[in-house]
Image (cartoon, rainbow, N blue to C red; front, side):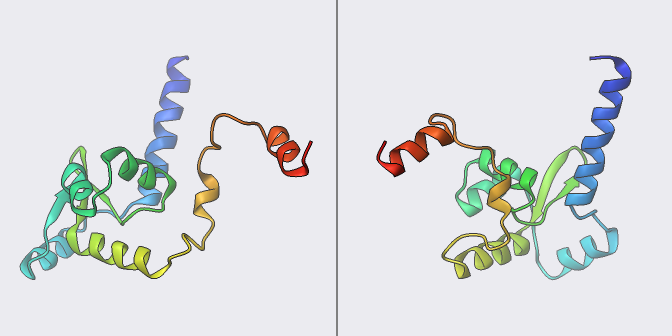
Length: 122
């Protein structure tokens, strides 16, 4: 890949990250810390919600996970936002209603034609 293409790809990823995450507003940070909220980094947040770190990264990539932000070079979460996200997940037992799961990669293995033949009895 050329240097120009690398820069364009990096800029695209940065734009996507800026769109999908909340910026860390200093006033909001002070307010949250004053009321006792905590900043949890990816590994701590994953342990808190009992999901693998890879799943948390994937949810963030799809935009279906808890609200997150960059804290320096690291991805961070407010503990309150994790609790709110868990609450919203528990109130929708049939999964996500917004269709976000449709953005996930298709499962490897059987093709759609093979699945159709199986369903049709052929």
